[in-house]
Picture 1 (cartoon, rainbow over the protein chains, first blue to last red):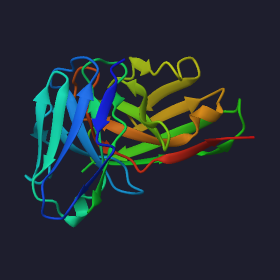
Picture 2 (picture 1 turned 180 degrees about the vertical axis):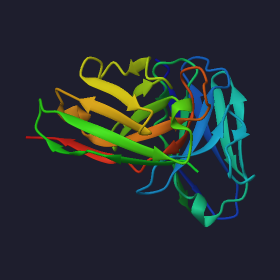
Picture 3 (picture 1 turned 90 degrees about the horizontal axis):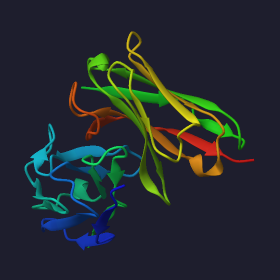
Picture 4 (picture 1 turned 30 degrees about the vertical axis):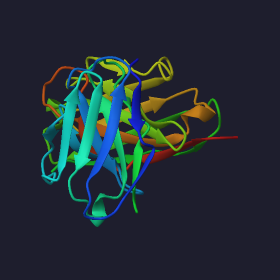
Amino acid sequence: EVVMTQSPATLSVSPGERATLSCRASQTVNTDLAWYQQQPGQAPRLLIYAASTRAAGIPARFSGRGSGTEFSLTISSLQSEDFAVYFCQQYYDWPPVTFGQGTRLEIK
Amino acid sequence: EAHLVESGGGLVQPGGSLRLSCVTSGFTFGNYAMSWVRQTPGKGLEWVSDISESGFNTYYADSVKGRFTVSRDNSENALYLQMNSLRAEDTALYYCAKDLSAGGVPGDAFDSWGRGTMVTVSS
């Protein structure tokens, strides 16, 4: 199965600044890569699919890029509601779809 | 907007059984494959099972194969997970999740999730 590795485990950024999160796949997943945001006590929320397409209702400050094995999620100007845990997920080599272990984005 | 509500979780002894349900609304249920995904603090998010739009095709993680059975009732807009021979390592918050694309190929992102139902396997 494809192993997804996210870095860093925790990222400390000030509100208004830019944050970039990384996700690496153990083998190519083409662009079949999604990003999710999870707030405490809530279910994951789809942000990005197909590596760079924003899901419905997702603000333009969220952007994704990458292909093959290297991916990133950038939040251009952090708002208070953006501090959460972010997961990547590959759905290219399936079953199973696999998730990264998450990056916690915290207020600096 | 899709709405998914899981139920059926609880405390069960090792070797026991539980049946999870997921009732949905706000979308044409029969047009989408559906999945179960579980989450633990230690292992993070783990895909458990997927079922095709018709229910004809089902898929399982190796960790649950032979013990769990996924099914759906398109007339009731409902998804189910029968869990048998439960183990301590099955302890998790179980989510049902909707595939992003209608009628798509298996394996997809998930654009709607329920709030989850907690399963605890312990003596």
